[in-house]
Length: 373
Image 1 (tube, rainbow, N blue to C red):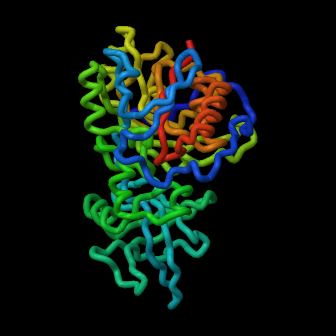
Image 2 (cartoon, helix red, strand yellow):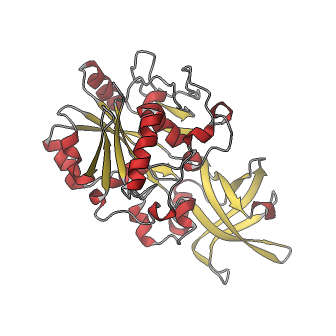
């Protein structure tokens, strides 16, 4: 089934001031590299009764019950940041573009900087070195339409698998701005900024909650009788951005493509019928499930875009637990976890995490949250 409609949160959510979701974070708590090994990261367990436990990811199997179902997002991050040059009338300008959304077979929506230096019809050569010699494999594009929000359309000379291969060769991993501003991307990020179970190309940001998991941790889950299933949501550029509106009702949520297979939907619905808990590994897995659930909490097998925006007042239909990183202030993700576990509880959890020196954001530590009973 292919659902073409975009799913919005239809619950009676509260209108709330965005500054309620603000907090101060010491800059030295922003993680620039992940923990090594991955499962040595710290884990803040926020219990159903509101208490906090400081744990380590490798011991997480002991926090779940036999029969619990963990839902992972198996999207794969593509090297979506491209560097190149635009030549026009003998003038050369260095261009950087971040691919946002594929428009098959040969076009991509992208954000470019400096975008003001590009005009419709310009030719851009990506993969260029400082002396403007093209790297192996040409990756040239023509600038198409420009939108008011700064996005452009790039029509590449290649299409299909050839285009994918050229982007993979020339592109850089699209690290979040709070990391990229402090250090350059390197070869290690190609492994670090990818979950070990990534399967489907399409994300331009990692489903970062999944970065903590290792084969050893999965083996511990199996031994404990904890089940696993995958959905796919291709994480977009807007996921980690702060909300600029003053009121949550004024924020326009970005749309992301997701797919829930019949196998995954059956496993999730069976767990719910049998009274077993469903735990989303990451906000993207949670949004995938909640956007595909009916009023009774039955998850549909479907694919298509979702722009579900979850803030306090939302009635959760599917997910009982949420494994997630520590998020940016004033972000839709901090709003989501506040809706899930309660704003006051999450404010207290973040105060605790900051006081205890937890590492924040994409390469940071993890938290395990439960819906209040």
